[in-house]
Every structure is written in C-alpha cells, then in structure tokens.
Amino acid sequence: ARDTAVLEAKIERALEKALGYEVSTFLRTPEQIAAITKYQPFDAALMASAAALNVGMMKAPLSVATCEALARLKTEVDDFHANEGHLFWICKTRQSGSKISNAVFERTLKVKATFRGMRTMERLAAKYPSKKDA
Image 1: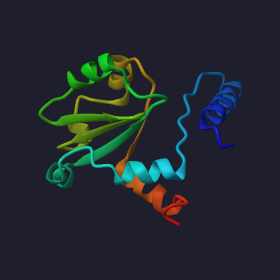
Image 2 (image 1 turned 90 degrees about the horizontal axis):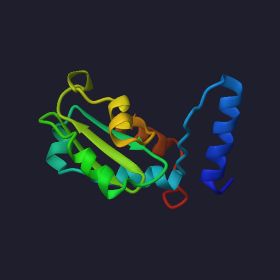
Image 3 (image 1 turned 135 degrees about the vertical axis):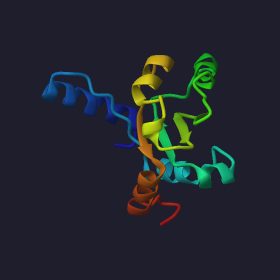
Image 4 (image 1 turned 180 degrees about the vertical axis):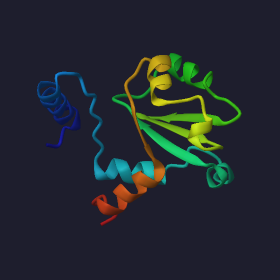
C-alpha cells in the first residue's frame, strides 16, 4: 500500500479486533526513516554529548498550541524539537534520570506517539534503505 494512513488504519483495526483494545500505529517509509536520521534537530555538540536522542512518531505535526505545551516540558536534562510529524527528544543524562516519558508526552500534548532511539532509526535506515540511497 502506498497510502500509509490507510494502511495504519487497517493495521489498527486488525490489532484492536485481535487484542480487544486500541493500538495506535505509526508507519514510516524508508524515505521518511532516512530523512529522520539525517535531520539535525539540535546543535551538533549537544547531540554528540547527550546520553539519549529519541524520535517520537505521531500521526500529524504538532499545532502551535501543542508546541507551546512541549516547550514548557523542557528541563535542564531534557530538550525537545518538533518537525513535521516527529518529536525529537534529547536527554543529557540517562532517561532513567528524566521525569519525562511517553505517558507524560501523551498526557501533556494530548496526542498519541511512539518513541524509538536514534540508533534504532539508524539501524532501520541501514536495513531498509530508501530508493534514493540504494
């Protein structure tokens, strides 16, 4: 299927039928994954020194009001950057030292999201190269 939104909805319906509860699904094409791994959401020095860099995938870009709520989550340890349907979360310490979690994001921003580490995204990009990179 070329329309990821249609495929996401189909997978969500099948999972809900099989499991008995809603499961949000977020698909990304190889081209989108490659773009995520190449994107530089933070200063290079900060990215090199951070303990964790995660990418949150959402159904749609954040609204202006939601970006303002996201900015209020910033701490000495955590910083965030939204780009298109992605939320980049950099943590200066181990994530276990952060008060932020996926549940905090979803509750504060009122959007569903799923997070993956940048290393995982890089491995996916290597395993499933985009047609442009192949």
